[in-house]
Image 1 (spheres, helix red, strand yellow):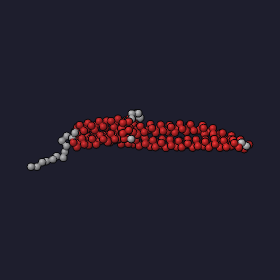
Image 2 (cartoon, helix red, strand yellow; image 1 turned 135 degrees about the horizontal axis):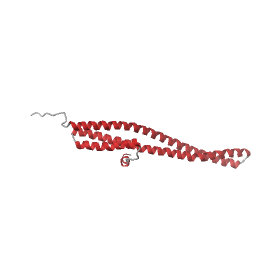
Image 3 (tube, rainbow, N blue to C red; image 1 turned 30 degrees about the horizontal axis):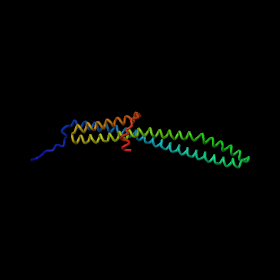
Length: 183
């Protein structure tokens, strides 16, 4: 008794649907990866700017304290030459006092920029994960010839597409549950 096994799928329609699904999701993921890469670069720049600004702020605060201490020493020895140095120190103290709050605000703005970019980075990361899951489900659906798995693939793909569109459009929707679980 011979059993003939056919290598061809019984239902070509499911294979066509899987192929279309994989192409659409793969192309979308590729485009999202480009945008996500640009966002990560901007996040790196914002983080670097924030660190630089905080370093400037700390240096300014240190110079302020040194200038105040130097002024106190000069005031104690108060000679004619010390009066000119005191005036110069008063100018430096005023300059550092004026600079410090602006540097702190700037560093906080860079941090806010980073946090805003991170939301979109998370959106693209979620999109990529969901679409990868959808593509995997579509592949299994083709192997098993299961429309149920293909529908599950489409559900994951739709959510992944939504997350990618949120990232491109700059919408504030954030996958908190997923991010907290994976972060």
